[in-house]
Figure 1 (tube, helix red, strand yellow):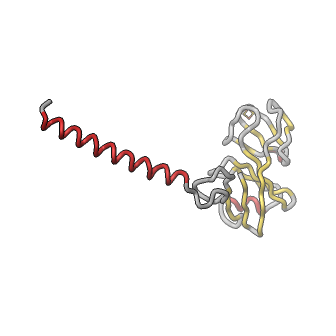
Figure 2: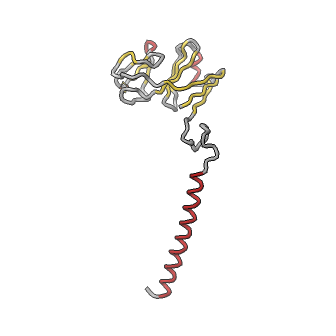
Amino acid sequence: MNRKDFIKTASLASILAMTGLTLQSCSSDSEDTDPNPNDPNDPNGGGQANTVQFSIANSPFTALQNDQGWLLHPQEDILLINVGGTISAFTSVCTHSGCARDWTFPNQLFTCNCHGSQFDSNGAVVTGPASSPLARLNLTRNGNDITITI
Ligand code: FES
């Protein structure tokens, strides 16, 4: 390598090093700055719980307007049921082996069709092989508007 090539290479290395330091500084600043670290609706999460919101006036949630109406949330792993006007939410992740999307509701029992476990409308195990209840999720209702904390 001659003197001219050495200077070109050294200059490029210096420029890259300076650029890299600048990018690293910007990246570090943006990761450390969350203006709403405790806001559950913050897309950065802030390490906090997420919320799911919908209206039972809109499809496909209208089934929840009726006693014993139930559904598996189409995007979230959440089972929902109306019992006597009170809507409850449970995780749809089965406590047996983790199936989350293959549920039916025959005879008023949440039935995981992966291996046949059944749960009542309070999430309690009725039929194994599951041995633990479904986890209940925090649900608040304001008229037709439902908010679930995951
Ligand atoms: S995963 Fe639900 S019964 Fe096995």
